[in-house]
Image 1 (cartoon, rainbow, N blue to C red):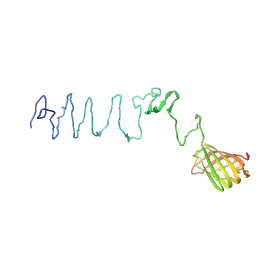
Image 2 (cartoon, rainbow, N blue to C red):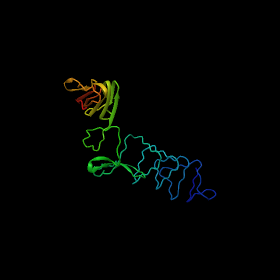
Image 3 (cartoon, one colour):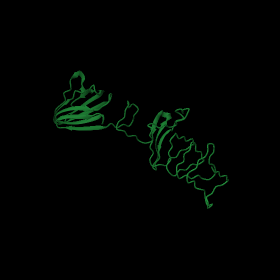
Image 4 (spheres, rainbow, N blue to C red):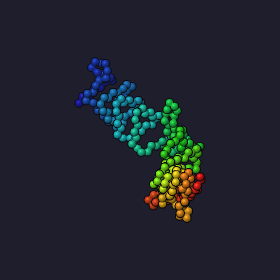
Length: 253
């Protein structure tokens, strides 16, 4: 076994560092130090790698855990994918109070202004900096303001008309001939209204989902142009059968 003892190693032409064609192994307890660079074109395997600055021009794979203890992490990638189904923010120990979490959240940077979802401690709620759109909202709605309730419109020249209770809470049916009104969807405790406008002579009835006081459906006017209003609350939905507690105001013509 040969040993080289030298203060400096250069290539044969004395123009740069030597190339280790078959790699190099360092005994336990020894390492590579210096103010210059260590360039590795192949694979580097290390139990512990310590450096003031680490630059990787190719791909880097970390088989174990990666801990970043600095004050800022910048990821300049086109696509960021995270396998974990839950992302923790402000994950520190001990956990921060609600007051200290004020302003914590997610920011989408944009030339026309940032868009944020953050914790608003003064109001004890999450806050969006933009309008929020959703096909449906759940809850009692007691704190909501500026709501425009959707409207569905249906026309019937005889037969069955199905109201989609998930689409809106106000419904309008233009009825001609013998028409039966039924529903689909809905959530318990929702309130809905149905405006029925006769276009020509119309006889309007209701499916068994509708439960009226005393068990009898109202007798709606049949004349052309007659308007009736049905109001109901969703009492039950699901396998047991939909039940709508309904009342009627008839003949507004």
